[in-house]
Image (cartoon, rainbow, N blue to C red):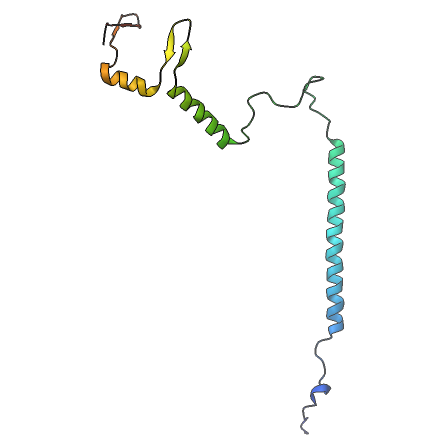
Length: 139
């Protein structure tokens, strides 16, 4: 048996045919683009069909009634709302004001109230027996 000598580098048979690989890649890209195009068309068709089948407004609304829900609405900026509420509460705790002007009840700053309680003590109340309290005199 005769030995076969290796051929020169330019004489080797090619094991892979690059033209078929290129054709396969082009076909794969075309199929992928076609699938995405088909999905986009179907999505657009379904969106248009759903929009056409939706009623304009709720059948529960009266003519002329708006679709805005009743108050209170959701908080849009909770941090801002919280800082505004805290500032209002701090203002009430630090200033004088009327609670009930007709009954003569006033609000005093909390620091003044604490100083007054520290100096004179808490007021004393006595039970009346019917579930109410009466002022028992001076502190």
